[in-house]
Image 1 (spheres, rainbow, N blue to C red):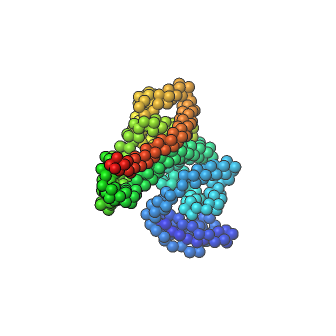
Image 2 (cartoon, one colour; image 1 turned 90 degrees about the vertical axis):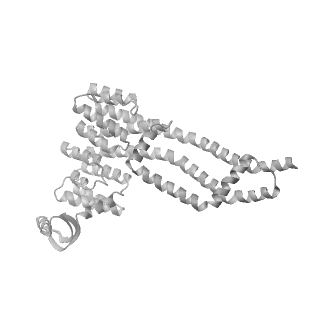
Image 3 (cartoon, rainbow, N blue to C red; image 1 turned 60 degrees about the vertical axis):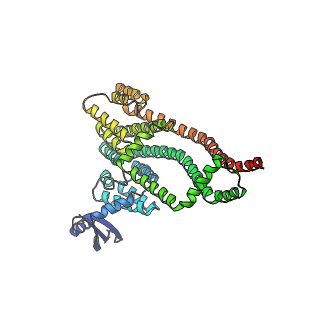
Length: 403
C-alpha cells in the first residue's frame, strides 16, 4: 500500500487536494472517475510507514478534543447529516492542525466506503479500542449517535475524575519540591556566611547547628556531585517506572498508601464499572466488553481481576462472585450491586449506579484532601523554618552564656 497526494476537479470543476492510501496510482484514477471528476496532478508521497508517523502525530490530540468530537458528531448524525458531511463541517471549524488533518483523513475514508469504526480503527493512538468498539456496536445496532453520546459521556467522566485526582496530588508535590529547593539554596549560600561568623566568635555550637553546618559544607564542597546525583536519580527513577517491574511496583504500592489507597480503589472501581456499563448499554457482548475494559485499565492488579472475571463467565460462573473474591481491590459494594444486576437482569444500570457513586466519593475525597493538605503543609513548613531558625539562633544564646 502506498500514499498518494493528488489534485482533482470535481463535477462542478472545483479543484480539491487529498492524500489517499491505495495499492497503486491506477486506483486513484478509478476512484476519481467513479466520483465523476478528473485528475489534475498526482504524486507518491510515502509508503505505508507514513501511517505510523501520522498516528504518532495524532496521538497528541487532547482528550477534550475527542470528547467534543464525539458529542458534536453524535448530534449532527442524530439531526440527519451524513457522516461525511458532519466530518467535513467539523474539519472546517477545527483550529487545531493535527485534529483538522485527522478529520480530513476520516472523511476521505468514509467517503470511499469504509465504516466510521473502520476509519477510527486506523488511528489506534488517537482513538482507543474502547472508542472504536462502542462505535462499531452502534453501527451494528443502527444507533451510532447514541453510541457517540455514551462514549463522550464515559470519556468526559473519566477525564474529569482523573484531572481532579491529579490536581489534588500535584499541589503538595509542588510545595514540597519548592521547600527542598529553598532548603538546598539556604545551605549553599546563607549558612556558610553564618558559619564564618560563628567561627569568629569562637563559641561552642549546639548539635543542631553543627549538623546544619556539616550539611552546608557537604553541599558547598560537593555541589557538582550532588546535582549530578540528583539528576541521575530522577532519570533512573523515570526510566525504572516506565519498565513493567516499575509500573507493577507503583500499582501495588498505590493501593496500600493510607488514605490515597482507598481513593485509588474507588477510582479504579468507578473506571471499571463505567466502562463496562457503557459497553453493555451500547450492545457489546459481556465477554468482549471485559476484554476491552482490561485494555482500558492501567493497574495490572485490576487487569488480572477482570481477566479472572472473563474466565469465570466463559465457564458459566457469576461475575459477582469474582468481584467479591477480589475484595482487596473492589469494595464489597461493587460485588453486591453486580449480584443484584445479575438477579434482575439490569447489570448495565447497576454498574452505572456504582460508577456514579464512586465518582462522587472520589470527587468529595479529593476536595477533603485538598482542604486537609493546606494546614498540614503549613505545619511542615513551620517546623522546617523553626528548626533552621533555632539552629542559627542557638549559638547567640551560647555566646551570652559564654560571656
